[in-house]
Structure formats: structure tokens, C-alpha cells
Image 1 (cartoon, rainbow, N blue to C red):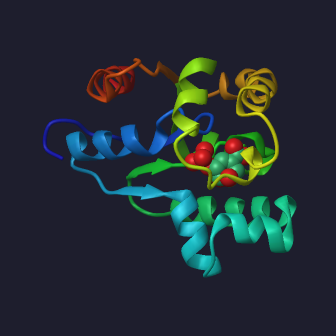
Image 2: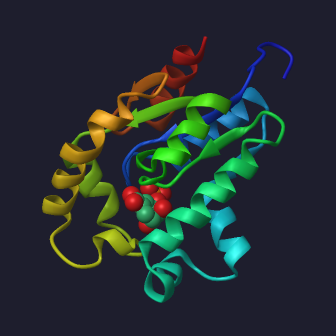
Image 3: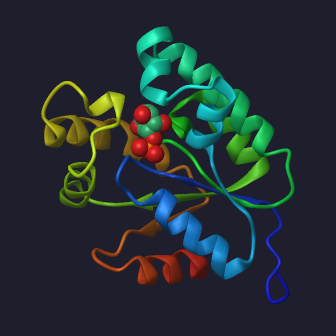
Length: 172
Ligand code: S3P
């Protein structure tokens, strides 16, 4: 990209439904950088879906695969990398992200997360139980850790373009 120079891969972190994939794609477009989604790469490497990995091997196995995939993606040239909501919670994965990338926490409040995760139900962690209760527990547990990210951007309700603009401003 001609106008700006991004020194390291930008890694989007934050809860399910925060809009990491959507905002990550838009940032990549604006910056003329490749976009990559860690969850998609994990699925490609495993040859099955994330739900299947959870079902067949459990969460610990998934986190190990996730850590390896993210480590590999952070060796590649600078890009925009979206990660699954639990990635930054894993100590090893977080360490790699903090060392090798520019971490950007996409923060959204409970109502937005509940709304956005209500549309599809492909997420193993939301399978059993009430979305609002689960997400509210995850906010308490995870937000203090996401706060370690280099940059925090609030998800502007209703406008992905505004959120993208704010995220890009956070980078420069
Ligand atoms: C997870 C989030 C998911 C996916 C997996 C576990 C989590 O990614 O990695 O279901 O622990 O929050 P998204 O945040 O993209 O939904």
C-alpha cells in the first residue's frame, strides 16, 4: 500500500459477534493488504469444521491447533488477521500475538453481541444455553484480558464503515 506503512500484521481480537471478520475485511481493503481468518485456516488445516473439531477432540485440542495456525500466520508478510474469540485468551497464543503483531481489540457491548450471534448458530460455545447469559459471563472473563491489546476500537452500532474508520485511526 502506497500511503501508509503497517509494520506488523494487525490481529483483530474480541468476542464472538464483535465483527472481527467484517471489520478485518474492510480494513484490509482500505489498506490494500491481504485478509486472513484464523478460524478458516484452522478448518482448512484440519479438513473439518470448528464444531467438528470441538466435538471430536475437545477444546484443548482446538486451542493447540489454533495456537499453531496463528503462529504460522504471524510468520507471513504483513496482513490483516482475524482471530476467534478465545485465541487471545490462550497464554501462548496471546504472547505470540503481542510479540509479532499489532493487536486490535474490537469491543462491543452485550446487546450488540447477543444480536449478532443470534443469526447463526455455528458456534460450539453458544450451543448449550442462553446466549445472553453465556456472553455476559464471557465479557466478565475475557474483557480484562482483551484490554491488553495494543489498540481498542469500539464497535459502532449499525455502521461497519465508521468502526473501520475508527480502527484505522487507532493504527496511525
Ligand atoms: C470461540 C470463538 C469462535 C471460534 C470458536 C471458539 C471462542 O470464533 O474460534 O468457536 O472461544 O470465543 P469467533 O469469535 O470468530 O466466533
